[in-house]
Amino acid sequence: MSDGASPTGEIGHPTMIDRAARRTAPLTRTAFAFDEHIDGREAGIEPGTECSEAIEGLFGRGERTVLALDAGTYWVEASIVLRGTRSVGIVAKAGGKGDFEVPADYDRSLLRIADVEHALLAGIDVDQRAPGAHPELGVSVESSFLIEDVGIRGIGDTTGGGSRMPLCVEAEHGIDVLRRV
Image (cartoon, rainbow, N blue to C red):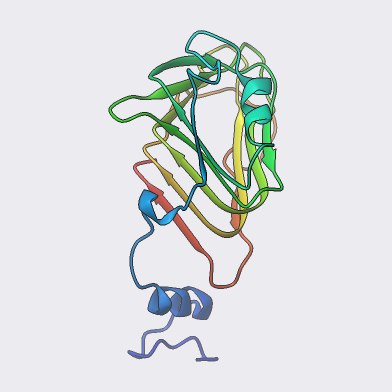
């Protein structure tokens, strides 16, 4: 397929065609094998509170950790950086939506997931309606990520260029799925 032709003779990007041909099923939440399931409220992360440090601290404990948040608004005043574990996930509990809200003039990373094999984000909204707010949501994984039911509220103000949602899968045969984003 060096000429970019698929097995059916279609011309396209060879890597994308090869990846699609090898994909056996769509990536879903059940594909993630988390060893540790943390209830946000039980861990002291409750709606209406600043959550940056508390969330980071939870992910240093295990190799495959998912955090389930209650519906509500969570304040983010510093970047949440999750790195160096095998699998991470932040999800809203069933039927709910977790809103991450940033203060005025917040123009840096809200959530940065890097140096992990797998990542899952689901049921989370980013509220950037404060003046001068334009947070970044970045995911860089080795093998796969699933981002679904994630919304951005507000237009956001920015003076810099570039993507505010940089996404990357390092492995040639990795899988990345965005649903209802």
